[in-house]
Image 1 (tube, helix red, strand yellow):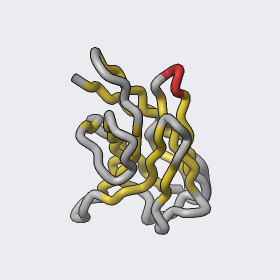
Image 2 (image 1 turned 90 degrees about the vertical axis):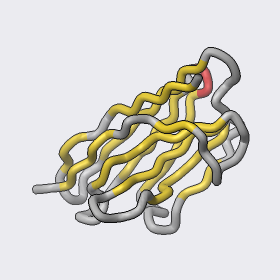
Image 3 (image 1 turned 180 degrees about the vertical axis):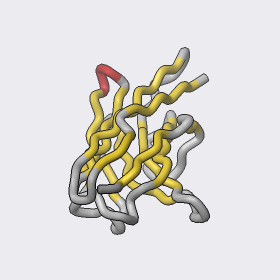
Amino acid sequence: QVRLVESGGGLVQPGGSLRLSCTASTDRFAVNTLGWYRQAPGKQREFIAGITSGGRSKIADSVHGRVTISKDNAKNTAYLQMNSLKPEDPAVYYCSGSYYYDLDSYAYWGPGTQVTVAS
């Protein structure tokens, strides 16, 4: 059983920054990969970034240059730093997790955290 809990969402002004956190808890195996997706109303869920416990990461082209992802293995927590937020960034941001070192496939999901961009 894997539990993912996001935090850090909220209201930010255009051009502002936000850091989302995702903490994983599990009663068995380690969650070796954590990722972030987002879903805006009426749109499909979109991959944003992922990172493994070994430090290998992947960031979507749509946010490249504005987003960084990091992971504190001791805390089982991944961080998504988002800068220069744009009007197209508002969405529910979901944390995703996997036991495997696979940046493209996730079996576990958090409940999501809302990000709103408005002046």
